Length: 316
Length: 296
Image 1 (spheres, rainbow over the protein chains, first blue to last red):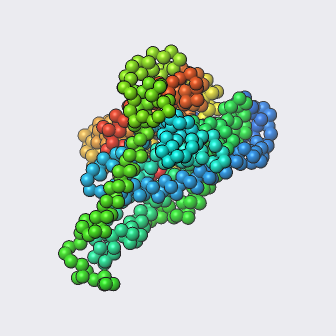
Image 2: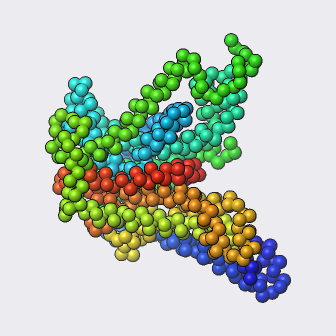
Image 3: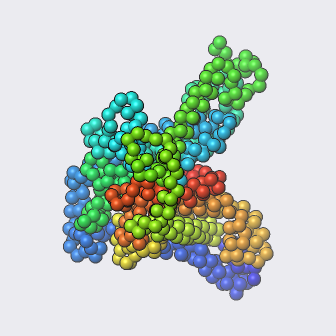
């Protein structure tokens, strides 16, 4: 009874004996599907079916319906790629990424170095910077919109500026100069710096101490030299992971834009626009699907190119 | 001065950051100043939530900024939950159900799949694995339109089923579990096999009990993700009875029907469970972040 299937070697050995073998193979087969089957079935239904269905919809006029009959060929794709609002959402994303990716990278690395160097209360500082991870984008947007950058006198930002004699600024609705970027960028920094800091700290702790000792013996000056020639090169894998994760997350920005500025044309990233197209007053699921697929392809290409450039996955 | 020979440095090599030279002292002071400023900046938003939640409306909207409310208005808690216009209790319940069932279900399904793929030899194992890896390439947020199409034709819009079930099948979690179980010590399982345990009982009696830290790490990060997620609950929660906390909060950010202090009390209540997880399970959370972040 203990022959309930181990390795294939055991099976072939047992097959000579006849009956136990069949039981063994059947047992393995059954066990495999008991373990893997429910998940695989769900994945097919809830990941693959929607994508295929969406691809199908993207070739049809699918306004307010999920079972369209009016085939329009590539028209939805043409519409999306010539739609000034969709293209401007790409511009919005690009501007956002230019701000958020380098800032997140530099600041989370700086926090990791600071926290890693301090001897006293290290766990305390790590917790403080990591704590916003427990906060949702919705709650953070609420704080930013109603208490810090609300544009009236009892907002914190305007109160602080008031100490220096600066007039109230309507942060979220001023388009020229584009003040709305300050709340949009700072809210994401506050929420995600701790997450990337943890990744960098883990990376820092994997650097062998002997490297630092060797550098010290060789007369390298603590500080910039050590960072430039030891720490930063050793963090290569972590740095690439942080850049890629961060860029993918920025592409999919939705929550803070939706809650801070809403569906406005001056600061509308791709997902907010697609949400409006496919779930707004006219549920245009054909164009929405086409836009989502275009976006998915762009993200995949960017990820692959970035991985190729940085040599992600190569031996370190 | 340009010497790089070890003889010129006195004493044994010391770890970096031990300097007592004036430059070292200045560096240490700069570090502490930076850390203190950073700490204050990071804590201000939390302070604002608590301050506003326990303030009267007049305190919040007073033209002069006050650090603390004139007195702590604890009655704001009761006001929030007795407000008929704001279905906060229902939203908290929905979020709790989605968080607990979603996390349990996702870990159950993904851990079993990961174990099967890592340990049970089968001629289709590779095909299933590629099926899973392929979904990792697809950015999760752009699938909300296709998923909505499916869920609406199943008639699951505005239901807890619609909120939970489509999120249960995480290719990423299954992938992480497979990698984890590949490195699980085989000796333990072989001992179980000798004792006559099949795959099923080996998994539940030996493998899972010995993997609890890994489960805890993924559970902490999955629960937080579920609790805080917004786009999918927004798409599905078209009726206020199926709102999660995040959808309810978002709706009232723009509505004029609610007071600011009440909204902040709602926000404070909504982050309380996560702060508790954070305080008591931070070890697992940190592990969860490094596991999911680096390998992702």
